[in-house]
Amino acid sequence: MSLNITFLGVGLMGAPMVSRLLADGYALTLWNRTRAKAEAFATDARIANDPVAAVTGADIVITMLETGPVVEQVLFESGADSALKAGATVIDMSSIPPAMARDFSSRLRSKSVCFLDAPVSGGTVGAEQGALAIMVGGERATYDAMEPLFKVFGKSTYIGPQGAGQLAKLANQAIVGITIGAVSEALLLAEQGGADPVAVREALMGGFAASRILDLHGQRMIERRFEPGATARVQLKDLRTILDEARAEGLSLPLSQRVYESYLALVNSGHEGVDHSGLLLQLEALNGCKMASSDASHAEAQGVNLENPDA
Image (cartoon, rainbow, N blue to C red):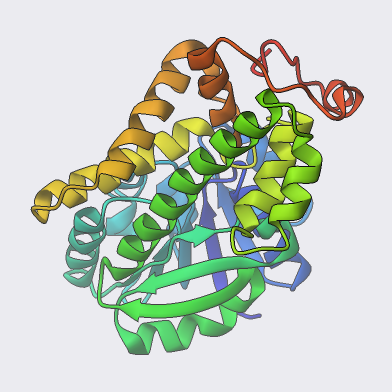
């Protein structure tokens, strides 16, 4: 509790994670590019004007940012890395390419700063509930020292050396993206053929096809609730990273490639801000049909326009 913790990135995921740290009594310094998002916690945390001021004197710095280049800009191009004290630990919980994680680790090690790549899965709901799955790469001793902190957010697993956490996250995102595609195709097929997708989902949840994607995102599709927990834009970014990593390893991943193309079409059609379960919208556009909502009133109550979920 006496540790000075800095949190950089108070967005969709960062905000509920900050809330959990504050509820556990940690002293926090916050910085966010859009200051108003950090100011929401001004009564309980110190708000810094820039990354350098934020990390000065910190024992632990946690980053939750959208892309690898953004992490590089905030940590290095801003000069924050030079403001870190020797012996501090940087925990990057963003989803970035493994090679960037290894590079960041090397650059910080030269300043006697420890680094862990610790991307998460579970979305905003998992962040709010402290039920995130945390995949950690880096030195084992550093992970062991940080494990009590990870418990605030959910369940952590040590994967291996620097970059290994990001490789695990890529595996996660491949499964998530491909399975969202499979669920959207299955439910649309059933509904267009005359079956009730609500009943189909219920039946499948009792069989071998059961999954959290079918459970949570299948329900989102049926109710047409596409307000974001994790955006289509971020899913597209992760799929692009998966394919880049595959090429670097000499691998061909045809399912990931196909789902990437579907998400690219979804984002290019103006739906970058919908939840990644909104891949159903692209499938509907491709087929010129629409899966009827089982609960249109719920979607309207959430402020989601069923014809344009980004509106």
